[in-house]
Length: 85
Image (tube, rainbow, N blue to C red):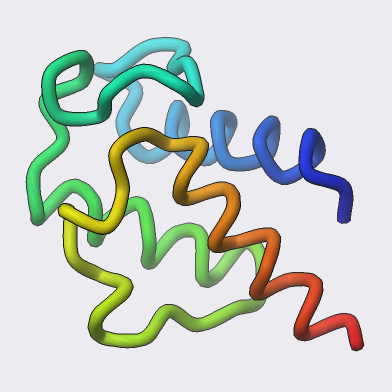
């Protein structure tokens, strides 16, 4: 999958999982702009694991690993690329 495809799919997934956020922008701070906390980041990660067929390690579940949703998209892309090899 291309980077932009992953970013669009992740944005769509976030809108489905957390409709209260509305349309999200990948490069905005997830804490100050969207009020994401440790519980909501895990909700998004679990949904991403299902959607993309990947797994996050325990340390990748931490909120402080993602400044914005673009950071999460990068992690997803790396995992998808590795899976496709």
